[in-house]
Image (tube, rainbow, N blue to C red):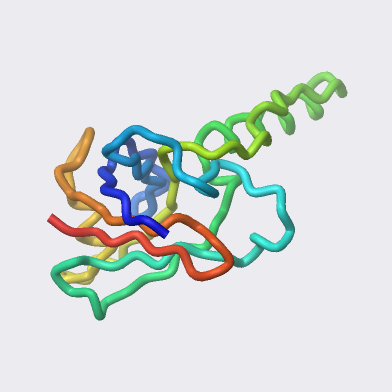
Length: 149
């Protein structure tokens, strides 16, 4: 596996303490097995291990949750809405193609711990972050995203 440099390129608020962050490879290249949707049942319960390069012993696991990907989530809401309102389900199944890509969406909750990893990520400000992350692409092993400066 090869390490890749990442940056936070987008964030979507879920609630006051929870946001979905898009970590994008600085190279812009697609990374093997980095997807917005995992259709393989063997990926259920798999996670990314996230840690800071300044404090590598402090680690957090973020389970793959494809339905929190902003595009997938929007399609699921549209599906439910259309089924309820018209009885005619509408869904763009291209969001389920699961092709290798250059970014991954991770949903993180912060508990406001002063030196906590999630607090640090949440406090990076708006827009693209200067935080770099080193990512080891998903495989049968734990996936790792190293967050550092």
